Amino acid sequence: MRILLSLIAGVAAGTLAWLLHSPVAVTAFCATLAVVALFLAAAPAPPTPRLLEVDDDRDQPDLGIDIVLDAIRDPLLVIEGQRVRNANRAARALLGDHIVGEDVRLAIRHPAAADRLAGRQPGDGAPVELVGLGDHARRFALTVHPLRDGARLARLVDRTAIHAAERSRVDFVANASHELRTPLATLLGFIETLEDRNAAEDGPTRARFLKIMFGEAKRMQRLVDDLMSLSRIEADKYSLPETAVPLDRLLADVRRALVAGLELDDARIIVVGDGAPCDVAGDPAQLSQLLHNVIGNALKYGRSGTPVTVDLRCASPAMVRLAVSDQGDGIPPEHLPRITERFYRVDPGRSRALGGTGLGLAIVKHIVERHRGRLSIDSVVGTGTTVTMLLPRAPETLSSNGHETVTGEEAKRPSAA
Image (cartoon, rainbow, N blue to C red; front, side, top):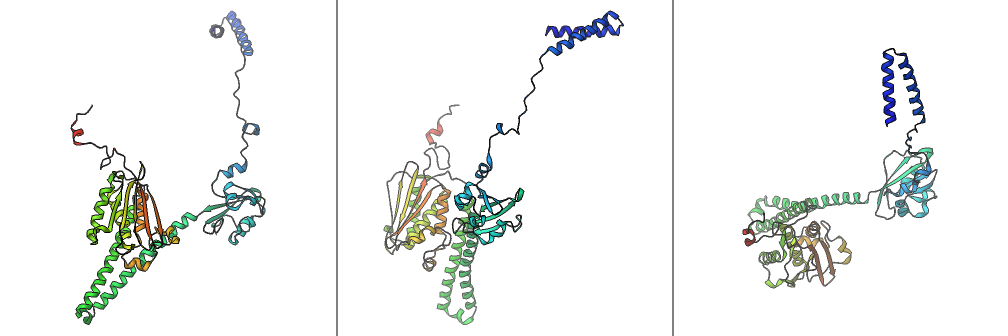
């Protein structure tokens, strides 16, 4: 560092002397420049930063096309000519490991896809809908994208869930329309009949018609109420209820309401359990609706005069178990997987005659799902049906408004702050 400062001072002195036209100083200045040149030549050159050699295959991991394709969840096929050159893991799981190296028309045996896969149709057209790949109920959309050198990339997008949701929506609208159209047609028919003077003046006939019309109007009202209720429950699907609800007390209230409203014998609804406090984290209105629907169904479809048993107990430290059993005709096994679908009925005629809308168990299912619980239905033909629900218990520190429990004495204590 000192040498460098001396050199800089010498250069400055020489420059000043040169400006003053001193021959001696000019000679000294030139000598100083020579020393600086020698010093710089002898000094080691700073290290040149090494650039990343991106083109050197030895410094890069060999990913390979198979690794890249396997990272994609949709089934993908790389086609050269008429044969499958590469297939990712999803494609091999769907179509089989043997498809690599095979003719693509044998790998995907579908008439609608043959021309597109063979390259005889442009690959940028509308997706080809394929049904039955892997399973008869599965649906895929096939698109083919051109690559270089005549190769093609075939992609299969699973549309099964989207198609099922769309079909469910269409069925729901059709069923709702049908359920409303039937009582409306009945009402219109009787109104037209009552417009006739002779029928209007016939007291017994008019009374009978009005009774039927009132029943059909109430049926439409129940259907609309259930549809609106189901819509509200679905809207709150992702809102986790946190209110502590004493399910044992709520069950007692529902039992009294049903016995009084339906004019039942007090022994028709039997409540059993372990007697432990059963507070669940839930929505009181929805849980009341759940109890009304499940117990009401058991009363409707149980044999006349037989009791309905409601078993309420703490199944575990985290869950409350509620089971409602009837002694009815039971449900055949083939109907159980679909029994919670909207408007699905085992016996449509009997259900309508008993005032059912076909939405009761669908509402129960959605309420249980919203409360993050589990629903199961077991039935034995000729013996009866048991509907079991597991609901999460409320934490002991929650009060009825979801906050920490504070008693009157605790509220009077001075704050620690």
